Image 1 (cartoon, rainbow, N blue to C red):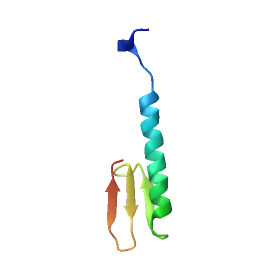
Image 2 (cartoon, rainbow, N blue to C red):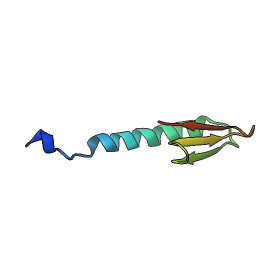
Image 3 (cartoon, rainbow, N blue to C red):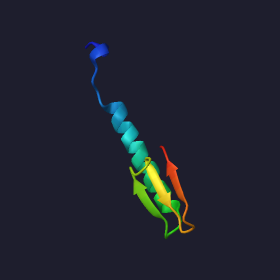
Length: 58
C-alpha cells in the first residue's frame, strides 16, 4: 500500500472522539445552571450565571 495516498480517517475520528469526551467531562463538572454549546463560537462555549462566556478550542 502506498502510504502517500493513505486517506484514512483514523486521526480525524480520534480528534472528534477526544473533543466529545472533553466536552462531556466539562459539562458534568460545571455549575448546574451553566449553558453549554458544543460547536458554537469555538468547540465548546460555556455561558455562566454571571453573564460571562468561556470559549474553548479543544
